[in-house]
Image (cartoon, rainbow, N blue to C red; front, side, top):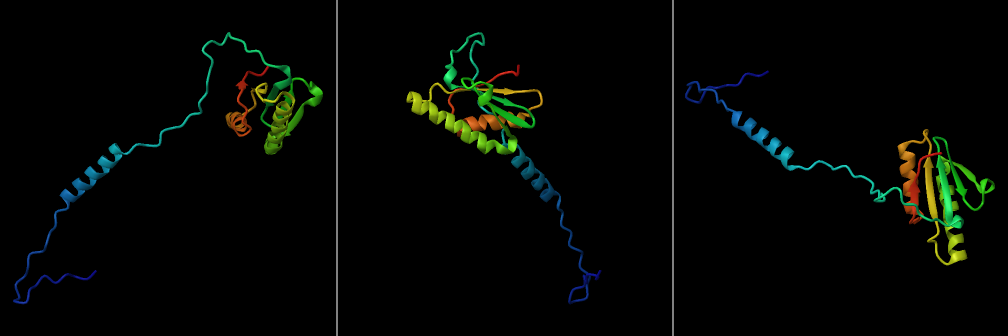
Length: 156
């Protein structure tokens, strides 16, 4: 490093200039703490889940509009109640758009048959191998397909 020449034009040596940075450090810490305490962190968002007030109440559902979605880790079964096991269709999780199309077809059939899709009711049955994210994906599908009545039930 090069040495700093502290001599003046008259030949006298100057005192070296010393800057005390302690107040600057204090100001920096005050600003950091101010921004930490005044900033709000991102609050976690949760899915709104409407639960009935009393779980002993039962709801009457038309058999023509009831659909069961059985979810496992690797596959998804869409089972219409009025079609029986023969009408059940299996999908993988990569085929979720195809399942969505089938659900929309069933919804349109109810609208054509009864003039409304109020009879459409979807039971979502995840088994023990299904992941939480997969169940949330099914809830998202209900919103995409505009299914107004759906329920999460335990697997049998």
